[in-house]
Image (cartoon, rainbow, N blue to C red; front, side, top):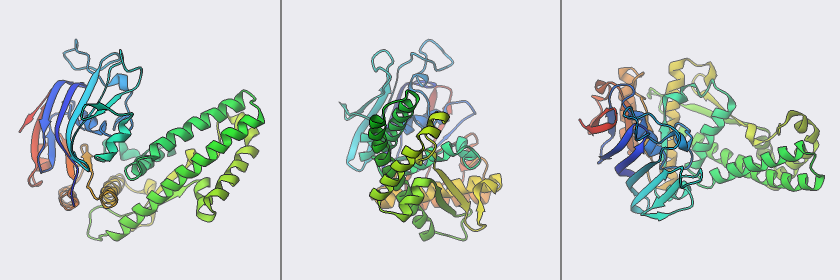
Length: 382
């Protein structure tokens, strides 16, 4: 299957890099160096070739490097830019994004082949970027909001309009909460709840469809010999349960009735207490039939890796193009057998993979990799 690839990456004023450039070829890309050298910064830059705030969910003003600070500390007021030559769904293109607080008014700029585009959503026409980071290791033990964000990124990779719908739902809910607080008229509340219900059903339906597709992908590629256990997925949410039982228009009407009846309760709470903004993603260890939260730390890590690989296969199957995969420090805590299983799975996936780690020996068995040494502010071929 064809794959999307980053051919050349250029950083300007990004995190610890005053300026850096690296090119990638056909093999996996391995970035090694001491902790704090800036390996994850490179993956974060690549994650900005996707909608959202990157793999660290950073504020735009916190990403730029202070030109006057030799340590590469970041801080408010520093401009930054990321540019990449990519070989994607539409052939070669140059994607660029950046932020200058003196000019951009709180919004990041995005360009394709030098021409402005409205947002990073336009990048999705060229490639999809997926990632797994150590910060995600606590996903199954953390609050539902973390799992919703994770779920919405899964959906966004196969449905480029999903982020717009989610943002629209959040805005509509804020409007409703404000009207309740200010004792807004019933007519205005009816209008905003009409919008909330339409967006809520669209968001919930997209999540359900993606979870269903991902579950089918996991079942189709289930391998008892894999070191990564298969996951079983479900959504826990009121609107999702309604969608499973009723036509979409009926669900909208029923959810509007829930909103209308819940106005006094929601006003007292200061927030809307029912809807897909509260949905949780339930993940279980398929073989053990055990909720992921009750699995060991190692099993949770393995479940996440397996989910990431399955999602990448789903994206490739739906788009006809393998995504770019970013794996931050993923091999460090795997034993030799699981590392070998991961490298074999990545080879079969066929996607361009960027990996980081402190110990080069952890990647010794990864054939055909392009290897880079990372030191503070610099990256060079090993």
